[in-house]
Amino acid sequence: MKKKLKYLYDEMMELRRTSWAKKSLLIASFVLILLWIIFNDTFCAFGGLSRRIVLNRIRLATHIHIERASALREVKVEEIPLDNFLHLQPNTTKVQVVSLLANNASLKDNTVDVSPKYKILRQQGLIPSRQLPSALIIGVKKGGTRALLEFLRLHPDIRAAGSEIHFFDHHYSKGFHWYRHRMPPTLEGQLTMEKTPSYFVTPEVPRRVQHMNPGTKLIVVVRDPVTRAVSDYTQVKSKRPELPKFEERAFVNGSNIVDTNWAPLRIGVYARYLERWLQYFPLSQLLFVSGERLIADPVIEITRVQDFLGLKRVISEKHFYFNATKGFPCLMKSEQKAIPHCLGKTKGRSHPYIDPMAIQRLKNFYRPFNQRFYQLTRMDFGWS
Image (cartoon, rainbow, N blue to C red; front, side, top):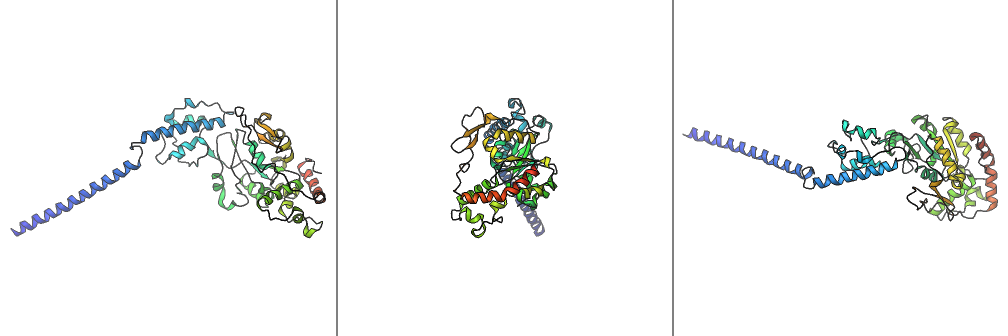
C-alpha cells in the first residue's frame, strides 16, 4: 500500500511539474504575442492611419523630387501605383521610405526591395544613390565660392553637399566611405559636387583628389588678392572686434615688409598654389572663375561653368535680380515666385577704411605673382 501511495505521489508531482512547465510556456508565449501586437503597427489599431500618413508623405516627397528634376525628365507621379511602395523589407523604416524620394535619406544597399515591382521606379530614375563628387570648388576663400555654389544649385543636374566637408584637408583619414556618405543622393545623369575653399591652399589635397579620381573637374573662384585679403580680415574682425587694424597685421612691425605669414595675405599668392595643382592635373581640368565678374555679370561666369561641367545651359538671365542696395545679385528661383532670394546678410557688407598707401604697397607686392598667375591660367583678370 505504501508503495502504491508513493508511486501515486510521484506521479502527481511529475504531473504537477509538467503542468507548471506547460503553464509557463503558455504564459511566455502569451506575453511575447502581446508585445509583438503592441509594437507592430500592422496589427495596431492605428496601423491603417499610419499607412495612410506614410503614403501621403511618399506622394508629397515624389512631387518634390520630380519638381527638382522636371527640366530633365517628364515623370507623371499619378502613373506610379502607390502599391509599389508597400513591398518593402521589414527592416525599412518609415523615415527611409519617405526620404527615398525626398533625396535626403541615408540609404543602405538592402533598404529597398529589388523585386520587379520596382522596375518602374528605376526606369523613371527615382532611386537615388550617393556618389563621390566628380567636380569640386576648391577655392579661394572669400573669392565668391559660396555665391557660385548657390547659383549652381538652380541647375536640376547639379546636387551639391550642403556644407563644406573638409574631407581632403581635415578628414581624409576617415576614408572615402565616410566622404561618400556626406554627399547628397543623386539620380542618374545628375552631377555630385562639393565646395571647400581651403583645398586650394592645402599642400596634400591635390595628390589626394587625384587618388580619388584623376578626372575630377576643379573650379577655382579668384578675386583681386588685395580686395580678397581685406574681405577675409573683415569677416574675422566681425567675430573678433579686438583684432588689431588691418595695416598693423599686414606689415611686419610697422615696416613696408608684407607679412606673408599672415593667412589673409598668404592665400592671395595664387600662382604658388596653382603650380602645385598643375603637377597632378592638366590645365584643361581646371576652370578659373572671376569673382568680380561673378558679381557684376553672373550669367557670363555661370555659362562658362555649365559648359565646363558638360551641362545644358539652364541657368540664364531670368534667374538673377541685382540688389542695388548691397551691390550683389539675388536669385529668382522660379518664374512662379516673384520674390528674389538673396544670400546672407553678411554678403555685400562694407569693408573698413584702409590706408590707401597700405593698399598700394600690397598691390605692388602682388603684381609679379598676379602676372605669373595670368601666365599659368592663360587669362588676364585685370588686377592692377
